[in-house]
Length: 606
Ligand code: ADP
Image (cartoon, rainbow, N blue to C red; front, side, top):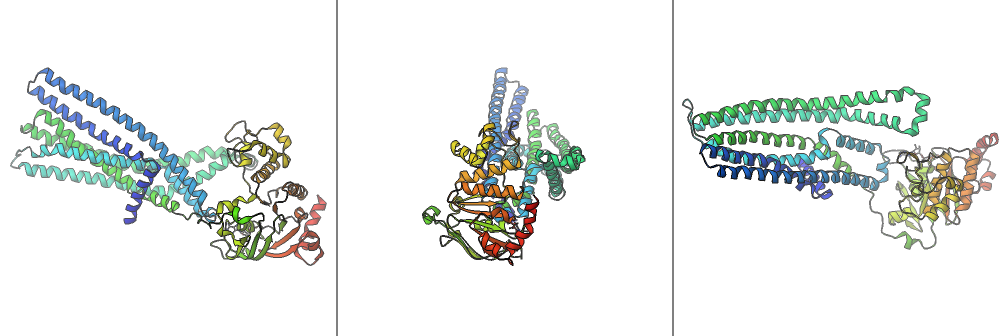
């Protein structure tokens, strides 16, 4: 319970920090909405009483004009606060999305690779998109709660006079009659509360259990169908998949929404019926007192309205609570995500100052296993990356090459041993500055559906000449003649975007690495899809472009890296050999010789 209360206030303060004016506008709008009916009820009562008292038309018209004027003013104010609420509501959601994105960017890298994080993000999105647990409905419920509270207070204020009006009905005095009425009133209200909160809870459970699974299924299904890049495969392998997409979507979404709203609707219908029964009872009771002559004709309207409004506003409070309370499910998931560990601030040493002209990185007895696993992926690695050196890391798939690069970049920490930059543990350097020294092209590099220039510079603002120069260096001069830097890649954002070939994509990714001007360049098999000869050509050409920077080339194909000064051979996480191509080939019992011999026949066949 305590945790739930803390989470509730935490979400309120989170809302206020994201969009400070949101709550004031929503609350003021709802309060005004609640107050206006009473202004009308009270002034109508005055007008009717004046008519019955045969007052002059001028006197009566004063009240009529006041009623029109106050209504007008309040409607304008309500409209203003409503539109402001909608505006702040929009900002709130946008700011919240940005907060989530920022959080994701700052998470520990190991969490980003963890499936359970992906699951919790999908769950959050689902809760935000569906039913009563989304952001706006929480804010609106808070507004409705305050509106309801003000309504109940004003209703009670007017109703008190009614209960005081003294009469006796068939021997039962006013106190007893009031008591009977209040018992029925409270009973019906409580029943209504229970019904609504039960149906909300059922809808919530459905959302949590069934809906979540269906939603994830639909999302991945739609991703496959609508992503035009998978179009070829879908057509080739299973046309039915695309044809059935609409059916699957409609079937599942209909199931989600119909079940959800059926569960919610049941409660709302029953509470509407109870409210009608209660209205009849109120009519009868007020009418009775009027017949006994203890209240005036004008007061009949005022009291019926006021007592009805107690119920209406109380059920507004109940409804809002029945959204606010179970939506703790959402708050819990949101804050669990928000509280995930962000990358701890690394050390404070500035890389620029600590580095001087040289940049020597060393692995000292480094062993590593992925968090939550028992198997060592790297075992006791001792390796030096000397300034200006060209180093190749070769080995079969799964031998640990990419993992070694992740450790080099500081995305993971070694389980044992340490990695140093110029003698100091890399964790002691400022993380962003440390990452800045690298230009990496990964095997699964990603280009975005943005303009060519933005892709190369990884930024909206960039030096056009530098970008052009980088593209020319990787051999894309002809491509540049056909397309300028503002040409969009792919067609997601721009229908005139260009579809690029796999080879062009690799070159653009390499141009990005060149543009970044990292002092330490890593090519982690971005050319794996090419044949060995083309990979060798690209690697050696790239080698000429990068000048005297340090470079690491990764490949499972030994031939691609034979130009390197030094080659280290990884086998099942162990660094088994180190040396130049010539030295390693001289050892006919070594792993390098074995791999080379087994791979060489493929090159000859080519
Ligand atoms: P290579 O780059 O040489 O193909 P990797 O470094 O990608 O090899 O993988 C080495 C081993 O680590 C493989 O057995 C792989 O399954 C495992 N591995 C890679 N990434 C993860 C991860 N995020 N979690 C757990 N195991 C992983």
